[in-house]
Image (cartoon, rainbow, N blue to C red; front, side):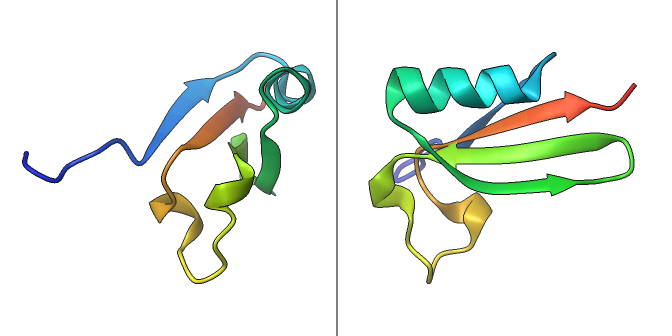
Length: 71
């Protein structure tokens, strides 16, 4: 495990918009990416220093993945 580190953490959320507001206003994170799939909506948030265009979204350190299941 030498050199290993957490890349990103994912959480299932009931209300995606409220959760995005919580992390952006409360923790100063910014919305990096949001996409809608067949069964879920995924939002990726991160701090400003994680906005490196040369690094793929899911390989950026310190990002937070919020997943909202469609009902």
